[in-house]
Image 1 (tube, rainbow, N blue to C red):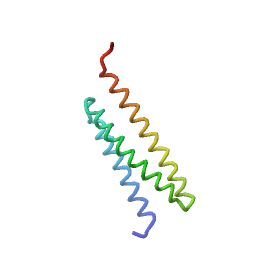
Image 2: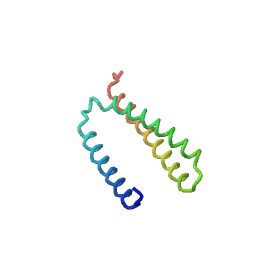
Image 3: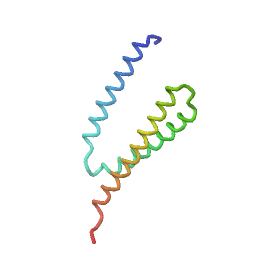
Image 4: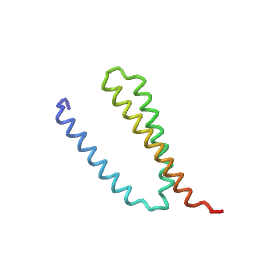
Length: 97
């Protein structure tokens, strides 16, 4: 596929399908499974963060550096937010003294 329009169409289709499937899966998760799944998601986001940092470190073109920086920023936000949500949910199960 050397046609850039065909590649863009294919990538946009995959992205749209991923959004739809992700939304359907997330809405079907019961509340009791949310915390264990968040822990797994945090681990995956940590791996994404390592990959983004490596991408920024080896960035030669200007656009690659910008996209790598955005990836690091978003992955960091996702990891920190995931841990905050997990901490808050686990706090709901603690005994009050």
